[in-house]
Image (cartoon, rainbow, N blue to C red; front, side, top):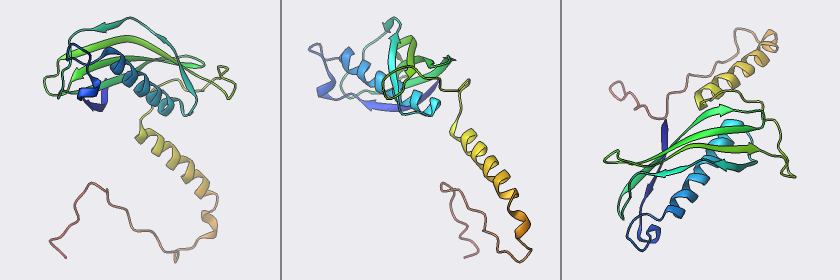
Length: 167
């Protein structure tokens, strides 16, 4: 389960009992599930078709930071099924679980369309696949280059610090 999104429970998120309003939490879940499906299926058109039993295990209060965990559990021809867990970021106490949310890939007329995906993919996989297709495309054109063609310097990762001891 990947926990990517965090929410800070604010006064406008509370019910009359002073705890997180279930409807607000479900709206956050539906939005996060749609974003997850869009990224996994590679399409911007998805709709929520089904949500299984929603199990509220504990409450969140004002000031709590909660995190939303989602993972794909199955890929259909036009759909993706997800599992959801919400927990308190600090205490790791489980707040809610949903065993299954089904989202469907649709066309402009909201008719289901095949998405062609069969497994979870991560951004690193997509970069590798894209680089592989670019490499094979570049191989077709490498015959026209000679040894004097300037080469690009390797890029350093954005999160790595520069080497200042030799500066």
